Amino acid sequence: MSEENISKNFIENIIDKDLSEGKYAKIVTRFPPEPNGYLHIGHAKSILLNYGIAKEYGGQFNLRFDDTNPTKEKEEFVDSIIKDVEWLGADFRGEVLFASNYFDQMYEAAVQLIKQGDAYVDDLTAEEIRQYRGTLTEAGKNSPYRDRSVEENLKLFEEMKDGVYEDGSKVLRAKIDMASPNINMRDPVIYRIARMTHHNTGDKWLIYPMYDFAHPIEDAIEGVTHSLCTLEFEDHRPLYNWVVEKIGYENPPKQIEFAKLYLTNVVTGKRYIKKLVEDGVVDGWDDPRLVSLAALRRRGFTPESLKTFMELVGISKSQGSCDYAMLEYCIREDLKPKAPRYMGVIRPLKLIIDNYPDDQTEEFEIENNQDDENAGTRKITFSKELYIEQDDFMEEPPKKYFRLFPGNEVRLKGAYFVKCTGFDKDENGEITAVHCTYDPETRSGSGFEGRKVKGTIHWVNAKDAIDAEVRLYENLIDEEKGKLNDDGTLNFNPNSLETVNAKLEAASGDLKPGEHVQFIRNGYFVVDIKDSSDDKMVFNRVVGLKSSYKPENK
Ligand code: ATP
Ligand code: MG
Image 1 (tube, rainbow, N blue to C red):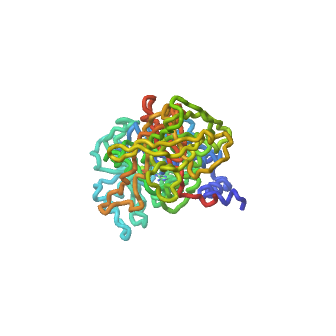
Image 2 (image 1 turned 90 degrees about the horizontal axis):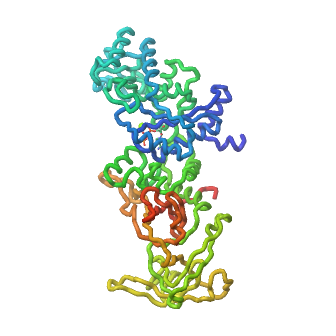
Image 3 (image 1 turned 135 degrees about the horizontal axis):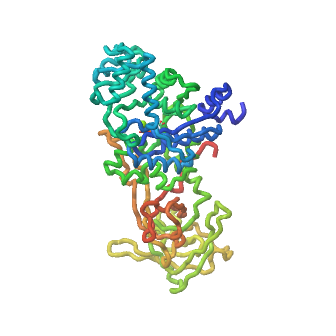
């Protein structure tokens, strides 16, 4: 086996076999979202998988809304889903498909099944249907309406369509096998009466097809060859195959299941995310603590980082949770060569250089990004009053603390050595400023080879520093203490959002919404695409710099 074959996933192996047997001329895949919420990272897995396969085999990727269930669907979700799929770079040629555009064909297919004796109109109530269905260990029993004649079924189904019957009073069922060990095959309902306005077809239809009947037809109409879905549909595959076979599609599509993506420390699942939004636990669908794609984009994740992540995760048939740290690793790797390194002080403390001339300002040239040799340099200014991190000063330092404390000397990154001479406290005992002296000999870039210092700290010039709001995020769920509380509610991390007022190097002011930066020692940040403005910049911390995840081959 060549190396290429070894790294292929089980879906690619199936496709290779199909192609070698000449089953399909062109590979067609699809992403079929239900427009009932925003997409999340799990959907990104499905999108990138389907699109990736189509691309790899020179085939076609379709974006098709599975909008056969009019109760929950909203136009707002259609727009956001299109935006997310485009953002991920999954090319659907600008062609947005809707399952509801095939309602006529689905109706025709149902009529065909009736004519073949493969479907019947049932008058049992929903409750009765449930009772007749049997259980996992007990066979179901036939409905008394199961043996209606083709003519009667055709007439009744047409009347269902024409509004003769009340909602729920009749259904169309596939006539398969009430004793099947697979409950999905026990004469599943394939059409129901529902007087609901549909976002696409309006009031045209009073009957709507059920998912298990509609989905294979949608796939077949579009010439989908491999219909990739998640594991919960495995038991539905026999029904999928039954539908395409009975309707007699040539080269029918094939359903293949793979495991859903779950992540630790976050909430995946449309329904759960929706509840967090509705309960006000988070601030909307794009709250950066969520893993909806809108939220990930706002948090500063890039499509490239999600692609790398999905490659690392791989495709499998077995369910499991992925470590959120792995996703963080991917965004760090992506931003490392891309994001400039600026100085930004997250929790500012004034540093006053008592022996530095009052009105003097000087410039230092520093590298924009040591991980990108083409990134160039920029000038930063320096003067008597600076800001440093509160953490970088301690009145009484513990052992091995090499930053500022009375009597200690440190390097101010890219500038001078400074030695701490004292500090000011207010009436509450809070430190309000640190005093130091600088040594002009130690100017950065001067070739100074004298004393060594153990600590280097970052700083910004108080004169031209930019004020900005910085939002520091942690995981929404604290899984260390267990995902659920005793009462079954989610165990939220109370520190999932901290908002601070930071002082940033002047160059930060030129960053545009959505642009990334590394504030050295503090992590990667992005200018918030929603709340940041010229009057007040807002930055989100995408990820810190330290990783708890190491990929195996690094
Ligand atoms: P959720 O489970 O979050 O409510 P869903 O399955 O109801 O999502 P759909 O809009 O029906 O959402 O899904 C569109 C496609 O995305 C389906 O093919 C589905 O299998 C896939 N999908 C949904 N969640 C995940 C996941 N966590 N990992 C991989 N694929 C997923
Ligand atoms: Mg669904």
